[in-house]
Image (cartoon, rainbow, N blue to C red; front, side):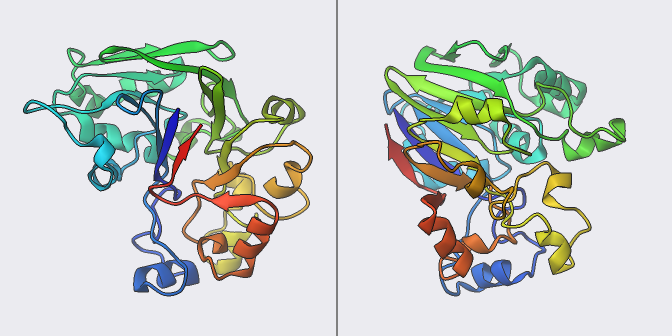
Length: 305
């Protein structure tokens, strides 16, 4: 099984277009070890030819152009992407679908809740049903993923993780932004004996989630913020990480502490915010992350399982 990181940053990318925080400024100016990144998405393949796209980033067109594996191969219209799977309805997970409206067959997978949100918005009607079949999957059951050309040789099991409703739906959920069990999910993706976990957004690591992840060979996990008050301390926002539905990397309640003792083979932070100092490879925070056995995902990273 092959995994390609198409994008590794949180919403807005790195540097975010209007952000002048130290990390973003360094990336924009090409300084130090601050490498630019697009918004988070991965692609997975059992055979290296036919691919499942997990989350469709607003930067999708750029990501596909930068990776030859996703270029058309035959005929006047073609794509190795045979299916797309969404882990939530957040803008940075679904906006790229609008770049896939050019009459190219693929199957779109999501929970019933997320598909319902897409169905409410007529702009997603640009994905003509003659070409794009929408399929719901349940939580907790292994599902074989089919694409436009049949079985992709991948099995996914989706499970709920603590999260938050999409930003554009917060007005519907005043007082309770956690959302339902189908609104934010994690994935175990398998092909034969190979497997890994993908959780780009998570508000906290529950005991049940800890046990589910124990012993995983590889995990991509929410790395949005270094500290819970990162945006507040910078004077950018009044929102904490917890308010945004994300664990922070550091601290007694942070991800690195929560993952201690889980015997995970390879741990990779993804969906990293433009303000997060771990994006600067020369920073003390990046060094601490590496010392704790974690990696920070980069666009173009390729992993074979």
